[in-house]
Length: 116
Length: 430
Image 1: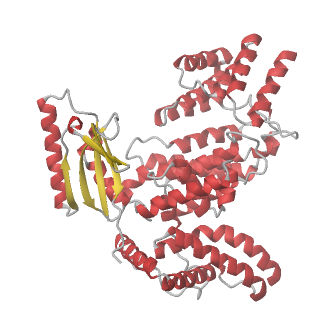
Image 2: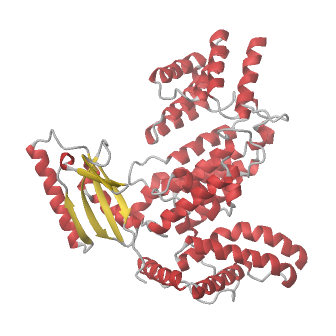
């Protein structure tokens, strides 16, 4: 079953080079662990929330606004898509994700539609 | 004899076997909804047939076989459901590394009904579910409560509870919360969640947070029954023994806890001859085990667990012939350890009350006033009630009355409100 791990963290800012290097390294080794376990289906880091643009269509009319869909304390910074047998296993991967230490990781099962 | 046995069995067996039946079915079919449906069908058909045919030699095996047949019927008719469940079953099988218990049941003496309830406990009390859903599911799946009974137990409308349960079951299915017992390495992280649910079911019965206690299903008995089942399934876990001990030792005082008018009585006002000696005896034996095992399996801290300690405190109370001859130094010492294991303002409150009994009300009041200053228990009526009691004993009547009034503003349930009102009135008279 596929799960999306959504990594939320406080918007980056006052981070020293050393700090961001440590974080980068921990993500590199985490990504390697996910790949080595054969559960990695995809994932990426996102550009900062200040680059976000939100689109809504209401009554046929396109509404484009600057910013994320909602202003929150923590913002979506990246994601992994993994293949895990059940929620416990997905939660284990989420707990190992560096994002769980800096911010929080939301685990969402991917909706599978019947092929028939 | 078979007629009477039929009637007794119908009640007893269903209550006792529901969780086991349901767990075996979830294990085989991997779907809680389907398992509940066919388990209810099996019970319904037992109600029809046992009074006529007599009770089968192994009622549990009969129920399981009947439910399985019904499930296979449903699956034959619903191909899509069957495909989905087949996939789940393969996964579950692989995860468990063991063949499905699929052999013909009902041939033997009931021993062939596998006990999968431990898995069911961990699924119902999974931390990915809201706490209120965890308690509701546990009562429904393991204690055999109907949705209406769970709703009455928690004083919410049946429709609200039904929705809560449906939502929880949907999350179990869609996020695929597994039906498994956590491995030895995860157990210390997951077991406290299960224990907490059982403890909450117990405390909900003990001091209903609102309304009057009449007409509610007996949650204290259910909590003890659930703790017993869990203790049978995990006999080597000291905190499970500790929780069961705690529930027994507190519940032993149930009959003495209210007077004939139904008003609450404090520990020092209770008629101790009405305490339940068997429960106290059983609880004391368990608490000794729990404390001893806590020391042996001391990889982490070496300290006993919070339930074992609370049980030990309850045991000291239960052993005392009256409040004055209670071993208060021992109780304070146990609270000191509890504060290290499970630090909380509530434990500090209880410790302060014990200190007041050991060293006098003035010392206890000092500790309580420090808690008031900290402000962490601001909304808690028992802090003000405890202060009021100590102020009364110190003869500071006006301050005592003010504290009782503050407690009354905060209290939620009727018996406690009546108790505080009575105390306030006595104060005015004296």
